[in-house]
Length: 538
Image (cartoon, helix red, strand yellow):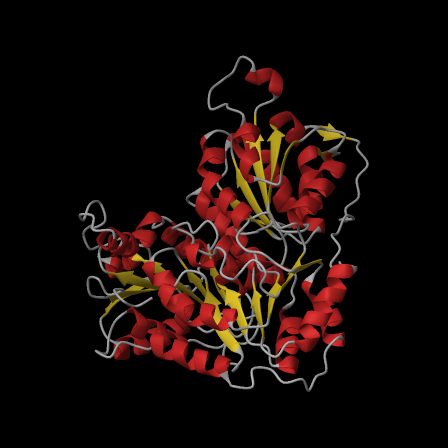
C-alpha cells in the first residue's frame, strides 16, 4: 500500500531530485524512509542552514530543485536563514517539515508552533499536506518553485499524512513543467528593435534570471556578433567567458569597479538589461542612469524594485528576445568605434592586480585562479574577501562561482561547495571564506569527513570582520565587536580528518593547492593576511 510520504518522495524523484539534505527527527522518519526508497540519497548535516545551502549547491550541479528536510520546532526554525536566501537568491528549494497532527496540536504543545505562519513571508507558497490531494499539491509546489523566478516552497507534513496509507491515484511523472519560451511582442518590441538597430554604443548587463534560463550561449553569441560588451551581476559571471575581450566581469559591490563601469554604461546609446535583477546590487546601482536613458529591459517577471527606469520593457525570456533584436540589426554594424570597452577592461585588470608587495588577498586569488583547473567551481562567503575575489576570479561558464549575493549571508560558501561536489562529483571545488565565516559552520567539516569528498577551503585569516571594521573606520566610529583571536585552522582540519596548512606566500599557496587537487580528503589552506589587508582594494 502507498503512504503519503511515498507520493511526496515519488513526485520529487519524478522532477529529477536525487538528494535530500537535513537532520532527522521522529516526525520525519517516514519521509526519510520514503525518500530513500524512491531513490533520493539522504545526506546528514550538522545544521539545517548548511543543509539548505548544500541543496542549493546540488541544484547548481544538476538542475533539479534542492530538497531540505527538517523536523518540527527547532528544525524548522533553524532553516529560516537558508529559506530566506533561497527566496532572495532565486533558488528552487523544496522545504519539507514534519509536524504533529492538527488535533494533537490543540493539547500537545511541546516544540509546536505554526511553521506556515513563520515561513510564509519568505516562500513562494506554503502547503499543509493532506491525504487524497498529495499528487496535485506536489505538482503545484514543484511548479511554483521552478516557475518564473525560482524560489523556495514549504510543505508541512503531519505525521499521520506521512505514515498513513492511501489509495489516492497519482502520477509518478511531473506534468506541470514551466514554459521556457516566453517571447516578446507588441509596441515595446518595435521600439526596442528600432533603438538597437541604430545604436552605435550598445552595452549589456545580465544577471541571475539569464543564468536560471540557461541563456548563456545566446548571450555570448549575441555579444560576439554585434560587439556588445557585457557586464554581469556576481551571479551572472560566466554568461560570457570572462577571458573574452567583451566580458567586463561582475559588478554590484565594488565602488572601484563601479567607477570604471558606470561611466561606460552612461556613454552607451542602448543599454540592454538581460534577465538582470538588481536585488544583487548596492547603492551605486540605484538609478544608475537617467530616467529617460535608452534602456531595453528583457525580464520574465514584472519588476517592482524601483531601482532603475527602462524605456522599453520586454516581458520575455532572454533567448527569444535576443533573437528578435538580432533580426533588427545588421551583423556588420559598428559598435564602440573608439574602443572604450577594451580600455575599461584593461583599467579593471590594473585596479584588481596582485599586490605589489608580493602577498595579500588579491595575490592569493590570482594565484588560485592560475592553479585551479578551468572546470573548477568556486564558492564565496560574505565579507570583504567576496567583493575582491568576485572581481578577480574569472568564470569561463555560468555557475562557475556560487555565492549568496542577494541575501549576502555568511556561512554559505562551505556547504554550497559540498553540495555541488556531492551531486556533481567531477569538477574540483574551491571555497573562499573568511575566518569568521568558517567558524560559523565548522561542524560541517565532520560532514565533509563523512562524505569523503576533496573540497579545498581557502580561508583568509586576519582575525577580524574586515568589511565591518572597514565600515566602522570609514564612518569614524570606534573599533567595537569586530576583532577576535586567531584559530589554528590547520589543527582543526586535522582534528576533523582533513589536511591543513598555514600559507603566507604565493609560492606555498601554489604548491599546496596542486597537492590538494590530488588529495582524497578535504584541505584547508589557511592564508594569513595582514590586518586591514583590504584597505583600498575594492
